[in-house]
Length: 252
Ligand code: SF4
Image (tube, rainbow, N blue to C red; front, side, top):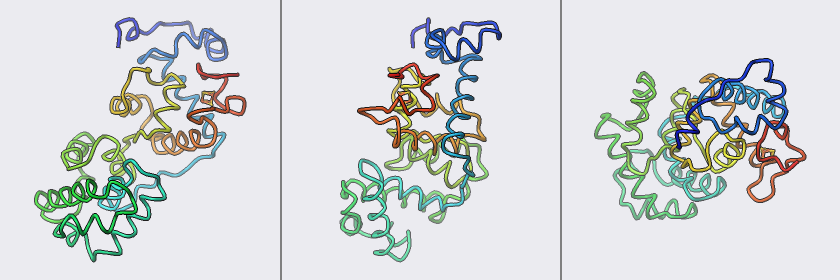
């Protein structure tokens, strides 16, 4: 990031309505730190809630299920990864049985999910590492760890990057980590929440810093919903978008 983008500009609070509704707003959107970023993210969260309703943070899924399900979701659709996960569970009695099975057998079970050979090796290695280091195949011990420590451990596992670790933290361990998928990445860039030069990996920490911890779960769900319904990759429906008034990429 260039130095000019790091330095926030201060405006008088009386200017805020004009800034949020007019052209000045476009000039401040790119600043990564400062009061206006907080104001903008707050407004985005509130508008998305107005559009899609509030949702309760659910973090009661088994961490190993989420871990394996997210590895299976890499580079394929939700439908295909769901089928592969169900087939894997149906083919083996336990995660211990998966860990000790030949990779080819695992690949056979998950072949409908794509990249089955690669994912089979990742799954086997991750489960073996957990078994070796935790004494059993389970990740509940991470619940009592600080988020960064839990994240570091998850990212030490085979095939686990920022998104997979974030999914386990958010959906199983009750920690306010923000998984950034293709929809969230695209919508966040268009909204100016992240700079166009920011990578997906960098987006995880940049967006997590902006969204209040108690709103992370809902923000994640709503941004995906918005990307699927309105802010499409090729032709965003800006004329139907509740965020168009504050979006620097709006076509309206
Ligand atoms: S105004 Fe357009 S580009 Fe901006 S978030 Fe809405 S649909 Fe996406």
